Length: 484
Image (cartoon, rainbow, N blue to C red; front, side, top):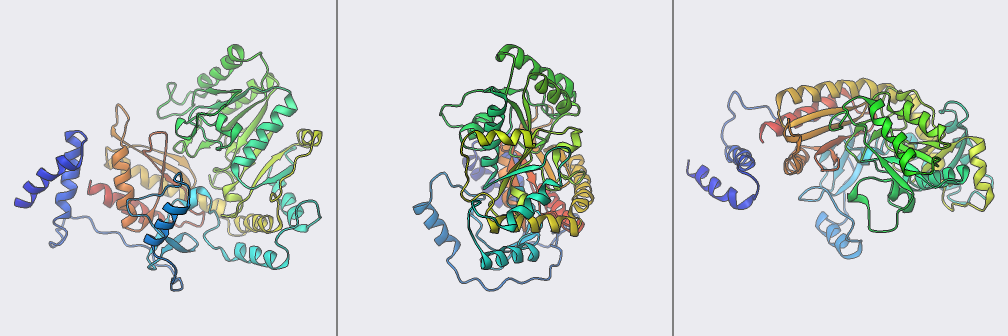
């Protein structure tokens, strides 16, 4: 009783939020003081991580504290980290990561939807090492089989006339190139993007991005942002056609009647794992093409089988873009991106010289080809569908149990869990999200966060994730929520 009085006196000074939030943290704190006491019958059982047959070699490098000191001294102050106590990761194998002390973590974030095949997948590693031993770099001015073989394999994954590939080093570069090509091809400058979308942090891509958190006060011209066709917070719910009218009105009132392009993600990643409302993309693609524009699909996060139901996110909407951009999962962590388009549109780059020193280098393209082979060989798309559907069902069951979960969404192994303090008002639970992320990490699970308000758990694990992993993830989340 004395402990509870002390805690209740301390907490109001520690947290400057409202009384109800203080009571929740007070409850969590009081439960932690009882940790040393015998477990009661109604106490939740602490989840156990699935067994895994791998032990990393001993780590002899600098400590987390030393690495943090060097980062603070030598890296840009813009470089930030997750968690109150930053995690130092030194080893990885498939869906697991290991810290400097050899502790294992279940990776449910996948390096921001990047590691698709699994950390250090042996076939991808072998492709990288073997190519590096033979020829690391030559530029595309010389012939090399790696870039040609990968381009052919990648083009085979697309419908219609999407058969020409240009390689870049990142998703930002790919989107920059796509926007420039659209403007050159159409002779127009106006681009339409969607609010809450993210497309990169360079000149044109920052303009297309519609989240103030990622926009600096620099010149950004020629981009109009349409209403976000999201089902959870959107004003028209799941009525995609009503949202699509906004694009038509932007063209009518905000341009001279012609546009260069429309760019969108099939599932907004940074924006909080938001799927576009049904019927939206077909209607908008029709409107854009009637205005002389091209349709660009940003598949940087949703591509390469992550959604399970399809290889590319746009396929779930029954549309065929004019240009597709990709990165992240394309190389399983290797810096690689690409733009895929039609032969006709690709010709615009011949008007002048366009060159990328590292784009399509032998090592990266060898890795990319290995990734495609692994996805097919190990049936990772089917696994993403099966395990992702199971995981989403289990997460939805948590929503029925905890009021703080406002929405569970996404498809395949690209899922989001939005936390709110009030389900009716949909008030973002920002503080609680950070608190839970730390607690979940302490129990051995790594997840990301996103959404404009930073209150959405982003769950984008490697596609080799198993049902046992899904159970452990949900059980850890359940346990942590029960202690709030």
